[in-house]
Structure formats: C-alpha cells, structure tokens
Length: 212
Image (tube, rainbow, N blue to C red; front, top):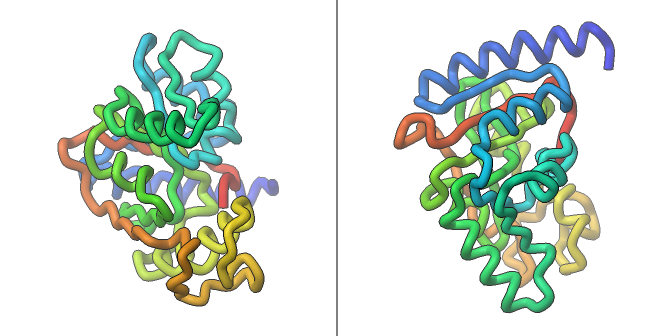
C-alpha cells in the first residue's frame, strides 16, 4: 500500500470515528491488522463468551485464532459435528458476551449496512449479545448511505456468494440480479444508524483492505 493510500485511509478514518461516536457507537482507528488485533483483545474481557458470524475481517487480522487460543469461551459454529449442533451454536451466539462481526459497507456519516442470508449475524447486531465488536477495513467505507447500500448489494454480496455452493444468478455472473432464488443470501438487509444502548456496538476501523 502506498503512503498516499495510508494517509487517505487515516484521514477518512478519523472523520468516520467522529461520526460514529456522534451516533453513540464506540469507535477506534487502527492503521494496520496488528494494531487492530491488539485493540480488539483489549476490548474483550478474559473469560468472556465470544461468538461470530461470517467475520472474515476478524479472521484476517488474527482475532478468531486469538479467541480460540486464549482465555475465552469461544462459540465456534464451524466446529459443530452435525447441522443440529451448528444451529445450536448460532443460537448461543445471540446471547454471547461478545459477538464479532464485519460490515458489508459503512457510510462516511457513520451508518452501517449488512446483508444476510439466514439472518443470524444481523439478529445479533440488533439485539442479544452484550457487546458487538465490528472489524472493518477502510475499503468498506463509502461516501453516502446510498453508496453503502449499493456496495453491499453489488460488491460485497456477489463476492461473498462465491464462498457458498448454492445456485444464484450472482454466483454465475458476479452481478446482483435482485433475485428471489431459494438460495439467495440477500434475504435480510440491516441499516444500523445509531447505537442503543450507547457503546454496545464498537467499531475497529483498519487502514487496510479487509473482507469483501
């Protein structure tokens, strides 16, 4: 990454931190993955139960591995041996002490957009876990909420869909067709515009490109 890009991300990051705080979120800017990991671990109390849902950005900074290896009660849906166990893990995440998430898009004025197929991730963001910790690369930041919605629908969702074997138009073409497929992963669209109670949702903005 060029020095100019680093400076650009940092300046936009500071604007976004200010705007997120004005909406009662906690927010921090970290220039790289290593500092983001250190900040995240600082915010997660030892012994806490920690779950996550599709948190690729958290995985990329090493947070998922650190939680599994550390003094935490990790709720790992991918360790389930049966579909029933996986479903139970997803439900346990809804009452975790800390829930880790990414963001499909953020607007510079401090709003977050997320799209889900099943809805477990957006459900946890809305209500349940005591703390929601969002790890987001600065590549997710858009100028406006409309731009953030467009990014989530036309960039994040089609890219994310390539991870799954289900058949949808975007898996074939790479472009959103606003489909009604049985396998559609865009069934729940959540805009999080304020935080209540204040500070429950915490953002760590990372000056790198993370996730989709």
